[in-house]
Length: 427
Image 1 (cartoon, one colour):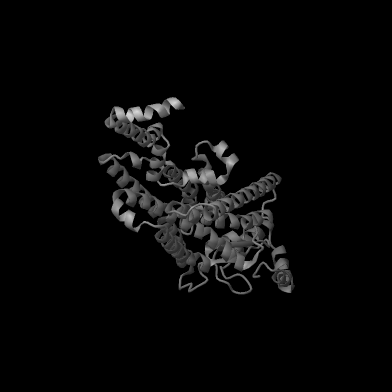
Image 2 (tube, one colour; image 1 turned 60 degrees about the vertical axis):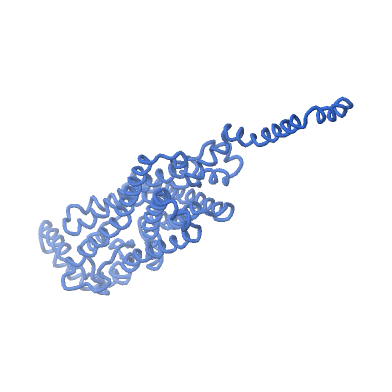
């Protein structure tokens, strides 16, 4: 397990260590402590028994000791409890959404987008218990390198898939308004499913580097980290420079592809849609409940993932500026937890954007989702059909038919009226 393993510890307490201890005992205390500090600072990254090359940041992180403050331990217990509750809530919420939308509702383009977004959130919620266990055992990864890679890959897969799906939903609504004829001929459930499959493939492709470079790294206090080991493949001539370049590439690529580009696409789609509706306002294209749901989901995505990307860029910069490392290490666990919360917030938005929540929840969750996952035009037509004017217009054919019968009787003249008279009086 590297230089933190019990074998290395027992070997290091042998004769060589005894001689070194005896040599240090001949020195004054100040000189002895200064020598120990110099040796610790000058220790090369390749310091473990397997001669594993580590980045300077990883080498410094591996020397950090577990805190022994009782108040901090209390905060750890509260954090574990909170993460456990969030994981349970996210699993139940997203599983219900996937079941109802996928198995109990008529499949449309809108429900297809919602189903895949809920699947992405369900994956993230399923990985949260592993992060909770990491916190519960003292910030140590005890599940092995395979689960380390899998857990991290699911986290980043959700990050990319959520951004891609939200941008596609906004683009779909824009295309449906700007090019209605094309959308009428090509916008189908099958096409939406193919687009979702392509988005998942692109998200998996972008997740591959994090699967490759994620690994377990032992600490000197016996704990284990699940972190980037960017020197695992082709470390190059200058390990420190290689670490900085690769860490910056990872942080910059996920910031651009999973945050900036989706939000830019959403903003551009909204601008085009607003400009078109201002030039040609149509009652049937007013923002409906699904548009409000998308706007709320985009806001939650930006608020939950924005701090994570900011600290990720700060962490990459810390490879060059060591003074930033303590700030990045303190903040990353909190912003990672905030990113996980996004998967729990999305199902709540389905309910909060639905009118008459209490009444419909008493009926079924399906009633709530059916009132929200509707295109804007279809929602407008539903409102018109349910309005009193539409009801009166629907009853007008029966009134006009009665009027035609009276007109025919009048044209037949008195004979027709007389023939009708005895029957009417005999009753």
